[in-house]
Length: 262
Image (cartoon, rainbow, N blue to C red; front, side):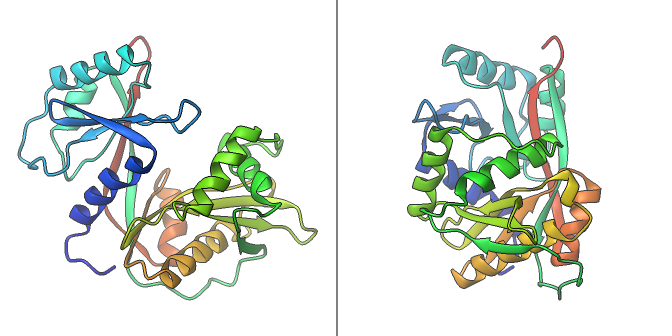
């Protein structure tokens, strides 16, 4: 980590990263990201870059964004860092959103491997035959199943384009017999990158596969000259896996979406 103010660095990244494949609208104190490709990733709203931390975001501000999201058939989702926009948590809850609070971690100093890694991990080229398998394993891992479904041709083509353009680096984990058991990615933008989508099939867990994937992605980021590497973890247990690699917690990433009856 190369900055004394990691949260400011992360806010700049959060504002920059989606713009490669999204348009934006300013709605009150929010920037609403809208996918430019109908088959692309469905984006979210975030507090506008540079919004002072002492600003008060209200439930009505959230409702106005949700109304606009419904008008354009966009998901009614929000992402933000609690420490950067502390007033948004109460506003989101009052406006009827369900909020997930996830540990936000930045790489401090890489630590030696724990010695548990058993999988073979590779960073993939855009034309690799393993791209579909990596996508499928990540989807299955997050779904908590060993049943791996073949991804759509559209999803595979989109991921290949992003890898070819340098917007995403994709890694895959292979079992001893060459079976794909996990995957992950990072998305470099300038001097900063976010590790995301790191998942392992249930049958391959507790064998250091997630740690090995994380190390491979960190190593790739460093080879690219990236100074700030960060990620958000699903919960404290997952965060501890990343802490073994050398990440430390710097805040809380919040994800808001409609709750029951919202």
